Image (cartoon, rainbow, N blue to C red; front, side, top):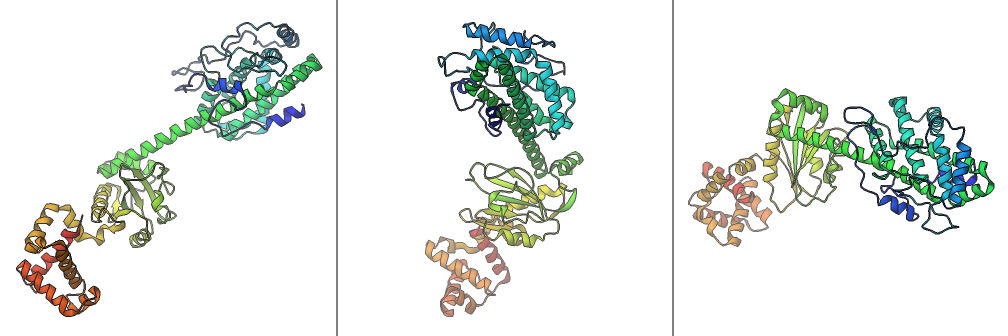
Length: 504
């Protein structure tokens, strides 16, 4: 094999999304072909499993006997050299240009050599089968030998038809490799294994083209070497089509998996965890145990950019804002993205709820509500309600973390907003009608007095004022409310009314 052939084998790429190579007009024309549609079943089969025709399968030059291959190739090259056009050349996709002729003309040498290889197709497929099995390509042991042989036959045939100037007129010539890339992904074959087989085929086809040209004449061999660029473009387009078909299949599988997880999470937070079928599905799909230490997290995030959340399930599915705060090695977490929320279902294992709240309180830059613990999937709906309630106790304009059990008074207020507002109006009376500056000062003094154990001295220290100032403000509050602060019931009403006034 020539040095050029060996070096060129390494040119195949594995990560492109476009089909055509970037190097010349030939590749651009290939990418302009009609959009490829992935068949619902295995390539080359109908939905009921019967064999079906694929683009590029039939070719008049293909037969099992290749004893006349050399003479056929020689005749084809000679005819092409006289300006003849092979029959059936309509629908050409890749134009293989020669530096010795007009840029828009097809390369007759490559066409003739491809015609010769078409007669050897059954033997090429068998050689490829031996190479593939001999190299021990991973994951192909999952695929029946007949399917591997069928795939090699259809892809080699399609490629040689392109080089021979006889691509299918009614379909994209890259539909075959893309369909097989899609199907192999569904079988569990990795894209690396797929491309390794493609590289083996590339090496073999180039060696065969090289041998055919050398057997004809040194001039034909030199022309093959000079005009081989479009051949490598076509091979590169094939590899990219394999990768794209594989990528589409993986993306489809990921989307279906994500949709399935989200459906199960929705069922749990809607209260359907009591249904045995839903609970079983949650164990299988989400990986959550039937019983455990479950909590729900609700994180408000109305401006999250696209891609903020990787819905992969455990750990990596955690919203970015929480990813470093959650002890993901110690808890199981599944997430559901909604319009303005991330909803997380967590199984704490041996992690204490207090530790989790402390970790999240370290500054996640979001408003986060954390539910109380529940011990079964059937109680997830209750936990979700508690998480949403805890989130509502936080002011809308500020970030922070609210654990439901630490905000029970606020929870009572936000779950009965009408009652809470009537309580505040009935308790504070005309105090709420004071100018905003005076009202806020009096309410802040009352709050500091309560938090200081009803001590004017401790409230004064917190407010940075004299003790008598605090006492004067408290008397002003009693005047405005019409009740004395030494009344236990009035004190309780004032505490609840403060919460009602300050809750969102």
